[in-house]
Image (cartoon, rainbow, N blue to C red; front, side, top):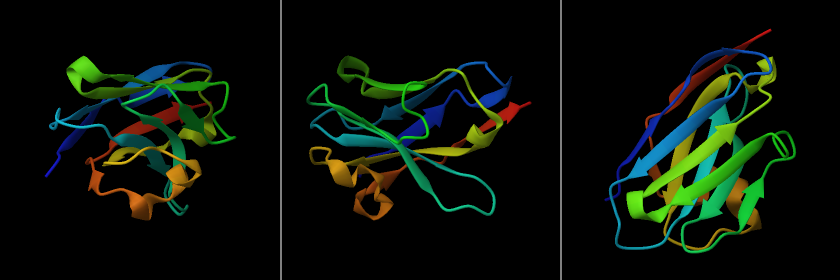
Length: 125
């Protein structure tokens, strides 16, 4: 069982930045690590994903060019650097993991086996 713990959420004004972290308890393998978000009344959205065993990354069109996902394998941690934040980025952000390479399916939450508890991001205008 892999445990994921997110941190780094908070409140920021539009145009600001935040960095989310997701620390995984398992350092014995490689995982596809995804970031998802869900705003009240909206469906869950896959935001970005990265495979801890390689450098390829995936991004939703809504965040491309503003968000950057990266992995520190020594620390078993995945980061989501969020720049140029917009009010529509306001949501609960979740980290997820599955022990396989990432692919074009990265936005499908049903494929991930492990989930964190979430961290709130609020962007005010």
